[in-house]
Length: 64
Figure (tube, rainbow, N blue to C red):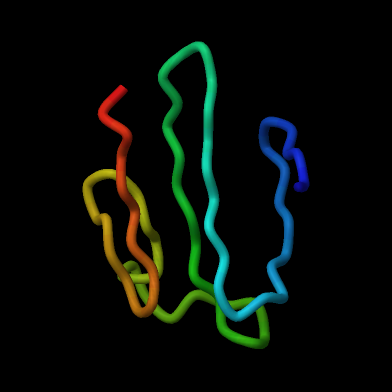
């Protein structure tokens, strides 16, 4: 398991990744889908609570 600090970025090399976030307070979690050269293709590559799906990724809130 890899722990992240606030504001950190961690590159992912695995084909499939599951991220489980647990905290004593409500968090705003988001993700960016990047191409091989580290660029986003469009706004559709920004995944968050109001845009919960993108190519090959889904955001699911625990409802907390």
